[in-house]
Image (cartoon, rainbow over all chains, first blue to last red; front, side, top):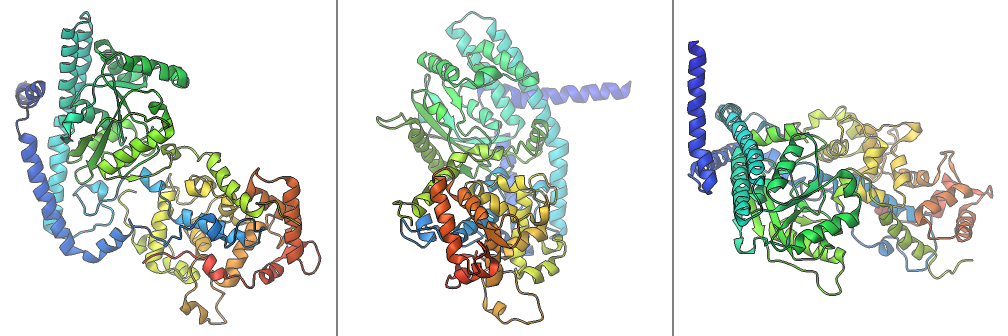
Length: 434
Length: 195
């Protein structure tokens, strides 16, 4: 009996503290500075750890660092030069040398495969999961690491799980309640309040520290917001600073409940799985949405899949065919405090969220960029590439022309046909054969 | 990539691989790292699908033949030694390689072995000869649908005739080597791994 009473008291004190220090400030969008203090301590600790590690093993580090720059010497000359000939020259047995060399070079190193696994860190950040090359350095470091494990799993994890739970329940309940009201500006204001509060709570559930830059370019109503994609958390990060209408498939389970609740309070665009295949239908609905200037800006991730935040891959042209103003946003995570990339082939959603909640923190920068529209004479693909370059430049990411779909599917045959065409022109060329 | 370190100790039989292929320890560590990155499901070996997913290889007209070269003798899996053995053909020829002990087997990156690798890409049934039919098939791989059957047959006929010396209608490895004796094979079929 006594035990149960004691447990009850602890639980209620705990909840009151959480309510007072975290939930209430979230409603008003105020910060009490607790997370800033946490981050300062964390940064100091990691700096100390880095110095200790560098003192302990300088040779190992240099080998690791050079692995991230190219590992083979590349000759990027075009096919004509590589085949040592002029145009219209005939086929030679030695042509195979060029193709086999290029093929083997791709096997040893290619730009795409590495983008689908987590970024390597320059120095260890005291998390077991990033401990690739670092072995025992000193007793003090190991003790700090042990302390870190205890803090993360026993203190932070329960807190974060509580917050996440509260955040999601509030979202569902809040939006359902707001959805009962008739359409009015009061309803919109309340729905915004509910969305923002719940997102702030969820961000705190991840110990997120987000820096927003250039807030004057925040996406406006009736526009389309476009951003690079690293994980499902991207949505949380963006919606903490403004409300968006989301686009996506209707899911089952918990996600489905959240989706159905959200759409009652404000118009998001959810598609059935069968509708997603019909591109015209999708485009039509999105066009209707942005035509209504009172509706919130649509949030779209044109890469179509999660990339590891070191580069930006091909933007699918579908989002750029709708018309309207595009507001690009660049999101860059700091991997030192926690790896936000969702490797969906390796981790499912639940283990991903657990990993997020047992990292130190999620730190990222969000840059809002000036709006862009399609210029005269520019087609959707060129426009998509222009926006992609702008986002890559702003976020300090490399730009790749490859399709993120390469994560799961094979590359399209059209690219191979291009190479075959080039080669055929060379050996058949002006048709001069004996 | 998880919490495994890329130390030489992790690579099984690293010394025998080093002797057989001539790669330095640092290069082997890098290649092992790459092997593990390509092995998406952590099986410990690579299958054809793992290699087909490399975008830059899939668009290579000879991509399928190159992938096939990793699976000799009808095998369906290639382990790390097998992987490195193929890559060793493309190791640049260095001075120390020319100073050979006649009792030791020829290094994998010798001119002869490089030529043999190229020969294999043509020799589909591995019978030691490139027949006109095989030449046609490989040419078809390289040009896709861009060239007519007639033009391709002309090219194949001409090439086989030029190289064929004993008139058996096929190109043997010796004839292949002879027709390429002026070619700077060492330079064209070398990939330098940066230190």
